[in-house]
Amino acid sequence: MIDQRNHRGRHPEDSELFAEQYHDVLREAASHLSWLLTRGYAVKSSMKLVGDRFKLKSRQRLAVQRSSVADRNLLNRNEKRKLATQVAGKTVWIDGFNLLTTIEAALSGGVLLLGRDGCLRDMASMHGSYRRVEETAPALELLGTYFNTWGLNSAVWLLDEPVSNSGRLKKVIENVARENAWNWTVQLDPNPDRTLIERPEIVVSADSFILDGCAQWLNVAAIVVSGIEHSAIVVDFQPQA
Figure (cartoon, rainbow, N blue to C red):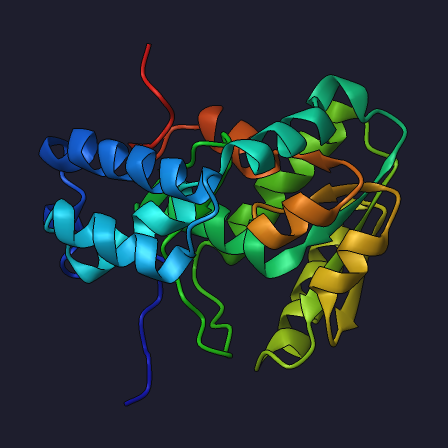
């Protein structure tokens, strides 16, 4: 079946699965999973144990897994994290699909996960194909506005070359950048995760593998979404005071 949706919005069950009444349960589940990961237990078996313990549905389990992190990884990420006030005059390297889909989800009222590490992640899944939505251009415009405010010198967008329509998105990003005179370049990369880990510059991503391996990173999605009005459901997995 062809996916004809025009927005990066909610799954039909998301309004119920991620209703506010479940936030405390999901947060506690993430705390339990993070505890197990900190002690070296495998992700798959730990997630099943926690998911069964809290009677979570499949999408709730996915959300908990994406939002949990072992203590050692959390410390490592915090040590390498840069602030928006520290990036003036610098170049950032962007995990393109990762950043863009999260901003699109925010603008279209999807579900966003504020993880234990403070990163904002969406629940979208591309399954090897990217579909442009009505929020794509507005998301890029929004990001460009924030980049200018921070005084960034330039941005390099990396898109997964194997993902269908990555070439089309490359042209969209390039056109938006040209229209606004932004110093952006877009590259199709067969393995952007590896490239981003190897770069010494500031990386923009919420991908756990990249955050654990990169030299330094900027939490763009969380900063941007916290500064705009939106109708997305935000599930906060950070420990509560």
